[in-house]
Length: 95
Image 1 (cartoon, rainbow, N blue to C red):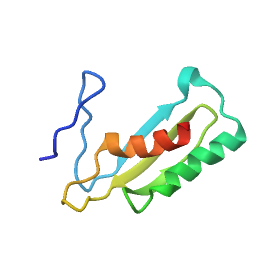
Image 2 (image 1 turned 180 degrees about the vertical axis):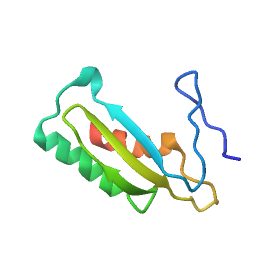
Image 3 (image 1 turned 90 degrees about the vertical axis):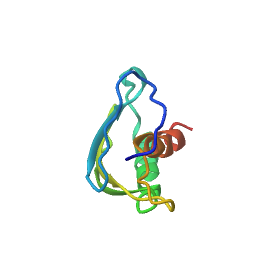
Image 4 (image 1 turned 45 degrees about the vertical axis):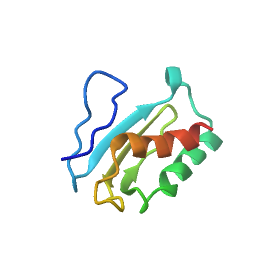
């Protein structure tokens, strides 16, 4: 059983161990990212690859990013959770 974590919305996100996840997120108000900003987002995705997840594919579009990855296990044996991975990608790229 996965450890509990707080949800920002009402519905929980399901995550099975050792299964790839498909995630997509958009820019605020579908803002069109310039080419330099899209490069930064891709670098942030690649930065945590092999540390928190195995990245299968990521496509940085002007206003959204779909990606497929498999979460890796932490030192305590649990898989990295969806919120941890999204914070690693979105937190760095937003700054």
